[in-house]
Amino acid sequence: HTPTSHVTYECRVMSQVALWAIVGYISSTLLPLDRNNLLGLTANVLCFVMFASPLSTAAKVVRLKNSESINKPFAVIQVANCLLWMVYGMAIGDVFVWLPNIAGLVLGLVQCALLALYPDQNGGSLLSSIGTEGDVM
Image (cartoon, rainbow, N blue to C red):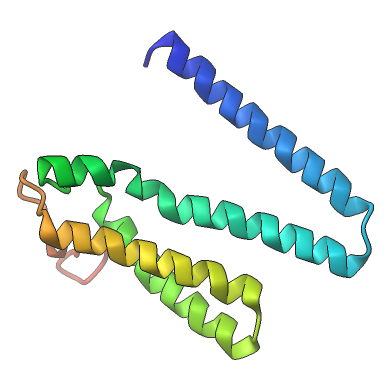
């Protein structure tokens, strides 16, 4: 990493810390329902960013026709996790649970589609991520 990228990373981290401090302060001044809505919305935005972050290499995968840069176990676990949370969120009628998980499910399926369309040219496949006992490695 170059010194510039290190500084850029530190600026991003400090920006996130500042954002959380501001959200925390604002939420402390709100009525409980408004506070819950603000925190739920903020958590959903961060959740979406987390679910989408593995796709930062999607253009590289398509350009090189090689899915080596996608973490295969994470993609599979993201699909399973988001599917379960989406179903649970719908069962309890909580939009703050089911909505981000629909997005996470779709984004995880996109990762899995890229893995299927552009196999890892170094021999790793989606199925090779599953161990002999069925454990995801």
